[in-house]
Image (cartoon, rainbow, N blue to C red; front, top):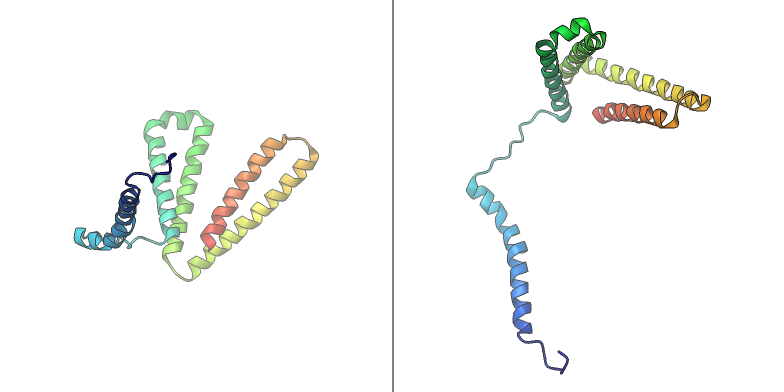
Length: 165
């Protein structure tokens, strides 16, 4: 304090602060495993491998989208060419996702087919990236649009590389 006297109850405040920190951090951390056993929380570690989960989720999402397209937009599918193309793309995506899921669930030849498919995709992405380089030097398209397409290529390539490792 200004007159030289000690802060009142300083030792008590420090002691209470220490106890609060000790109880909140250490005690709770040490007793958490006991609480988990007491509550009987089980680890649900029986999930599919990450790649299979990814393929199955995408397959379900594509099926839901195709179902919605067929029920709500049936007239537009036949009248609008773009909506028809969208339906065809969804059907192709479902076929590819189904084959990918099947490959992930099996061994041997199917995995080799999937690896070859991934290598072909990576090669095609590389060719597309080189074409973007040529387009950038032609200065026909805006740099912003070229960067957007390049980002899409990067994302697609990253998905392939993530699934390979």
